Image (tube, rainbow, N blue to C red; front, side):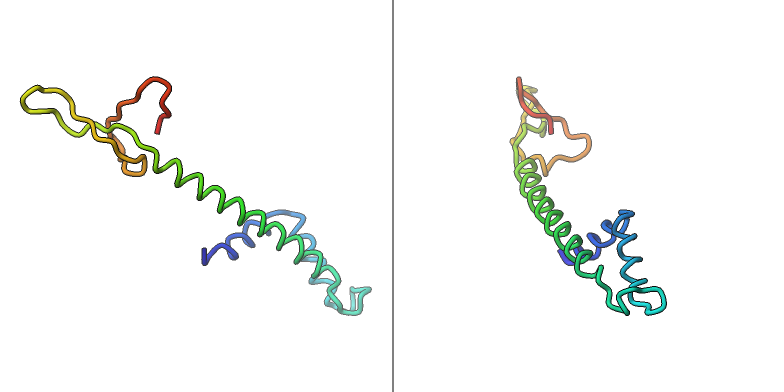
Amino acid sequence: LINFPFMNLYKQFHRAANVYFLLIMILQTWDEVSITHGDPSMAMPLAFVLLVTAIKDALEDISRHRYDSIENNRTVLVFERRDPTTKEPIFEEKPWSALKVGSIVKLKNRERIP
């Protein structure tokens, strides 16, 4: 949450168009090369594009976070141990987020794979 603006700007300035408009805006501040007499007229359109893209990315991240927590809270049967008397396997129901590498899971017909 704290690093979102920085990461978002970093990603946005990897796009050639955003870098181009940033360079044009910087050049507009020099009186010798600018026809705007030092006024960066590209600042507002660039800021608008960056803001709209940041809002879109934030909404996508929030949506992805919600769907990830739904998926991670689905349950699956995980092998725990064998019953010492009957030698039958004992499975416990756990959320997908509790699975570890090497966990043995029991899947039923048409059940999602974690």
